[in-house]
Length: 448
Ligand SMILES: Cc1cc2nc3c(=O)[nH]c(=O)nc-3n(C[C@H](O)[C@H](O)[C@H](O)COP(=O)(O)OP(=O)(O)OC[C@H]3O[C@@H](n4cnc5c(N)ncnc54)[C@H](O)[C@@H]3O)c2cc1C
Image (tube, helix red, strand yellow):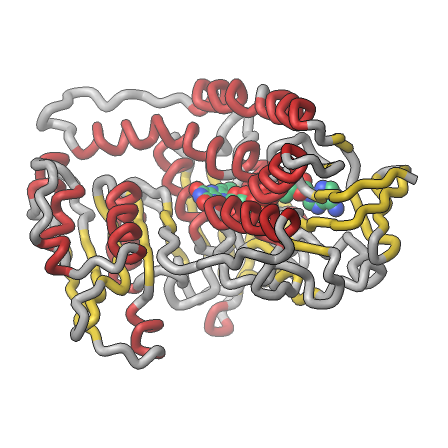
């Protein structure tokens, strides 16, 4: 049996930070991952996705400016983009493992599961650790209708050697929208089938309306209020069936992607043997990110049932907090206020702070400023038809409660609102700031 002060399960952004930091402070640390080291963000999510999106952003700009400043829209190549993505991803696991080696972290390459409160089975090894961290991330939710397992996942999508000619996404969340915009611009015929009344349910309805219009103008077919009931193989690839209003409808595509949400990757960990309480949302933890049933277990990132959204910056923050709490006996608590989030469509859609619905539920007294503003200089210069904002401002204090945007550079401008909310700035503070001109960020003065 091997013994450690700390053993970490999962080498994503959460686990990596905890293992390296605790080892650098002198703890004997081991870490394991059943997949190559690096986790979702670096290998199968944020980073590879953004590399693939670079060329589509260019195509989007060029298409908007066609016949104005640009005569030929540049051709973009899935294969070439995939090659740059591969070059980035391929070197990552070895680079990260070198970092662990430098910090004295012992690395394993098998899946882990609990056998006792302080013991794990990692491949063929029995590991005993004073503290165990669960940082196993999330996995695509299983589709439990006939043919659900014929679907592929976002990971498969980011590894397509050739882009399928047609794609159906089941579920209209942020991954579906980002990948649909990407695939459509690389030349695929895309359909999104969503069971709800509106897609992107976690985002502001007014902003979603704008991005929905932009999505349909890209010839992406958006089918709402439609619960898929089965998937079968067909001549074109796959046939997707649903029965909205009792009338059977079918769609066909070369590939079907499961984008119906992600669940914490904790269900193969034999958590009962480790006395670790969990729900469908993840490991149940106290304010120090410590298991409520086994005090020697901590959790961080997508595997945790906390108020933190399943996002990389949240996983990083929770990782720092868990490392501190292991090293300094429960001294830090996470702060989930003002965490911005982006849907990397073109243009992007971004959000921070409270939604109008949340502010109402909290009984706050606030004003809403909202407008569709393609006539503002930022959009006009780029001939961008989609530019809109909604901000919530507390009446008495003038403080910014929430901001929701779509349009040029929304993914960057939202960070200014995050700073404003975190720093307790008022609309007057923002209005009296001198910002660079002409720039998208200077528009915030007129949004509050
Ligand atoms: C397609 C996609 C795009 C995304 N885009 C963004 C974005 O633009 N911005 C953003 O902020 N977030 C984005 N996310 C979310 C972000 O990637 C996650 O929130 C983040 O990676 C979570 O980090 P983590 O450390 O909790 O888990 P992960 O990075 O998922 O790491 C968990 C690791 O644990 C390993 N593991 C699981 N079970 C076991 C086991 N039993 N034994 C051993 N190892 C195990 C896994 O192999 C994995 O490597 C995206 C996610 C996806 C899927």
